[in-house]
Structure formats: C-alpha cells, structure tokens
Amino acid sequence: MAKLMNAKEYEESLRKLKLNVYMFGRKVENVVDDPIIRPSMNAVAATYEFAHKPEYEDIMTAKSHLTGNRINRFTHIHQNTGDLVKKSKMGRLLGSLTACCFQRCVGMDALNALSITTHAIDAKYGTGYNKRFLEYLAYVQENDLVCDGAMTDPKGDRSASPKKQFDPDLFMRVVEETRDGIVVSGAKAHQTGAVNSHEIIVMPTITMREEDRDYAISFALPSDAQGITYIMGRQSCDTRKLEGMTFDRGNMHYGGHEALVVFDRVFVPWERVFMYREYDFTTQLVENFAAYHRQSYACKVGVGDVLIGAAQTIAEYNGAEKASHVKDKIIEMNQLNETLFCGCIACAAEGHKEPSGTYQNDLLLANVHKQNITRLPYEIARLAQDIAGGLVVTCPSEADLTSPEVGKWVDKYFKTKADVPTEHRMRILRLIENITMGTAAVGYLTESMHGAGSPQAQRIMIARLVNMKQKQKVAKFLCGIDKER
Ligand code: SF4
Ligand code: FE
Image 1 (spheres, helix red, strand yellow):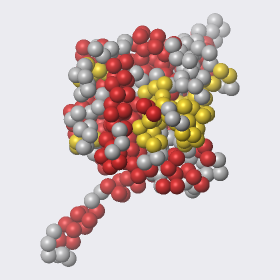
Image 2 (cartoon, rainbow, N blue to C red):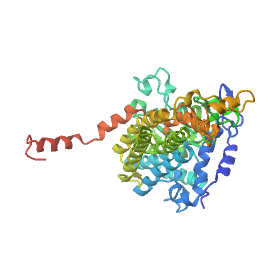
Image 3 (cartoon, protein in one colour):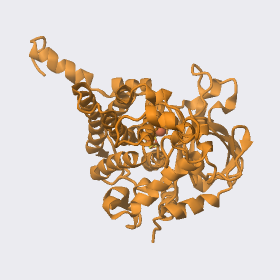
Image 4 (cartoon, protein in one colour):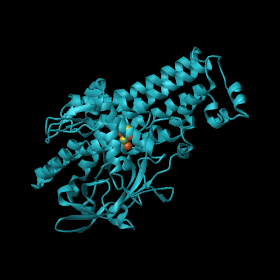
C-alpha cells in the first residue's frame, strides 16, 4: 500500500539524507533547519500537507495506474486529459496557498516525459528502458518521494555543441562504463528544490547529434549519492531570513530555492539508466519535458492570486480602493492572471494519448502559455507596485517600528486609518516587496522568464508547431488566388 507522507514525515525523511550542500562558501551541516533553506522545505512540505486535506484530495492525489493505490499527484503518470487539467489546477492551488515556487513539479514532469521516451526507445531498439523506468516509478510512488528533474546543463559556449566545448564537462556525460553501470561527470544548473529532493532525475538538455552520444544520457539517483555536491543560489534579500521571524522577510512561511548540482564521477547502476547514447531520442525527451514543465507554470497564476489579494488589501489600507483607476488596475491584474490560467487549462484539455499510454499536453498551447508567463506576471507586478505606492521600497524595518526611540514616529507617520495598525500596512507591503523584488521574485518574475526554457525557446517551438500551410491555404482560397482549400 502506498504511503502518502504527511508534512512532518517528509521533513523527517529529509533529515536522513546525507547531502553535500554549500552556501555562502560554507558547508551546510543541517540543511532542514537552516534558516535560509527552511522556508523552501516548508513549501515542498505543503505538497504533502494539502494532499491530506479532504477538500483538496481530488486535485492533490490520484490513483496509480501501476498499483491502483492512491498516490500524491506529483508522482502520477497522466492517464487522461482530466489528469492534465487537474495538474494545472494543482499548480494554481499550491501557488495561491504558498505564494512561491513549491518545487515539486520538475520531478513530476520528468517522470511523465520519461514514461513516453523510454517506451519509444524500446519500440525502436528493443531495449528494456520502460520496464526499468516503471520499476523506478513504482518505487517513487510507493514512497511518495520528491524528485528533482534535472535538465539544464551549464552549456558553456552557446555556439558550440557538447562535444566541441573547451571543457568536456559543461554538458553531463558518461566518463566510464562498467559491468554494473556507468560513471558520469558534469553539472546541472538552476536546480529548483534540489536539496529538498530525495531523488534526482537527469535528462539531456538539448538535441544531441551522433558525435554527442556520450552526452545522450538519462538516469536517476538518490540525491545524496556519492560525488554529488549542491551549491545554493543566492536570492535578493535572502539574508533577511537570518533576522529571525521579523516580518521584513515578507512571506513568513514559504520560499523557494535553486542550486548548482555538481556530479564528480558519480556511479549510476544500470537499473537506474533510462537512456544511454540513443541521441536520436534526445529531442523527444527535451520537447516533451519542456511542454509538461511549461504547463506547470500554472503555479504563477496562484502566486498572482496572492499578489492581487495583497494589492487590494494595501489599496484598502491606504483608503484608495474606491478610486476608479485603482479599481481598474485590480480588474486588469485579474484579467491578466485569468488569461494565464486559460493557457494552462487549454494545453491540458487539448492533450493526447502517447503510445506508452501517458497523456501529453498540447505542445503548441503549452509553449504559448509559457510565453505568456514570461510577460504577464511582470505587468501584474508593475500594477501591484503602482497600487502599493513608494513605501514598498522606502519602508523602515520592523526593528524601527518596535524601537523604543523611533517606533512611535514610524507608527504615527505610516498610519493611514485609525483602525488599520501600521504594522499591518508594513506587513502587506513587505509581502508585495517579497513577490515583486525579494526572494519570491525569483519564482514570480525571473523564473517566469527563464524557467522551463527562456522566451526564445518557446518562440522556436511556436514557429515549428503552428500549421502555417493550412492558414495560407485558406487565405489564398478565400481571396481567389487558389480554387481549392
Ligand atoms: Fe513548479 Fe512553478 Fe516551481 Fe517550476 S516554478 S517547480 S512549475 S512551482
Ligand atoms: Fe522551473
């Protein structure tokens, strides 16, 4: 019987890992309790916590197609378009409850993409990847694990292929083959939730050619496998989390993180290898994963929900909520946010069944959705800052508000209404700052831009996937250039 872990059990499971983590140039001995990393652990823990709430059960859990057991949806292989739609709704739900990146989507997207590609490789070459993969999937589902889906290589000189890089490790590669498995070296950059993960699933980052065969590899490992090192990324305002629980941190509960993950001659047993030199399947794996992950950016709709709620709140605190331009800006924020929701629902509803049985979302619509995500959150954030006013960046600290010397002045001069505590006004401003400029801006803005592929990656896919010939054909028929359509 599958185990649906709760948040506490998840936290305890992380304590058992022996991760090699560095931050600010020092080894982090206690990752789970580190004040900078901890909020990101809380956000992943929310994916466990809400799976136990009856009101969210339908969205947060699913029936495993392998065992029939109830599992967390983050470990599920989509069996129909309804599953894909629920995946989008789950992303929005969790974003709207945490206002940050909850990190668990990349693993779900990697599992689904691999379920398709391992099946396709076997069909062409008679290999046994799919069976191996399904055994691994059952292990992940039964133990309710978090997987880091690791795709992005450092990539070095963008004009050179993996084989032609001045340093051969700039793309993940096989350095040795043994009877029991392979030895790999390289790195994966910007890895979301890496140190909150039990497993790491590695995939190639671009289409590989024959000369790049040694780079056409996919595999899974425990996150604390020997030879793996994590180097935490910095975030704007991250050290505010070292100030204890002051409200200057903005989001008092949750956060996200990214890390550079280095593989220094790491051994991978054959039973965890899902692609080995089949370079002709790298495009499919990358494109399927990318489409799934671009759909996952439903999360930003949820973060947008919180930002809109914060903007409305500060407008009310300021006594500005009845001004027609403020009302209109709130409407605009909602319209933009719901437009984003349309995209992630549409690409899910238009999904199709792959030969493996897995449902894949619509690639064109997923790319269009992600392209919108690279833009609209910036506009929503701009409107939130407009409504918030300049105090969002000039506000004194909590320590000034509580200071015996100057606290009375901060309280007096930043008070807007007799019944609105100055502290409340400062708290909501800090949340807006957090989402649009602070640690959560990593997730809401820059990750919206570059996560799941930078904007140009989607434009290339859009150009490739639209049926231009058909559009031209009808245009030429209707204006009389052609006799048939
Ligand atoms: Fe999931 Fe969104 Fe975080 Fe990506 S940015 S892992 S899609 S929550
Ligand atoms: Fe991402």
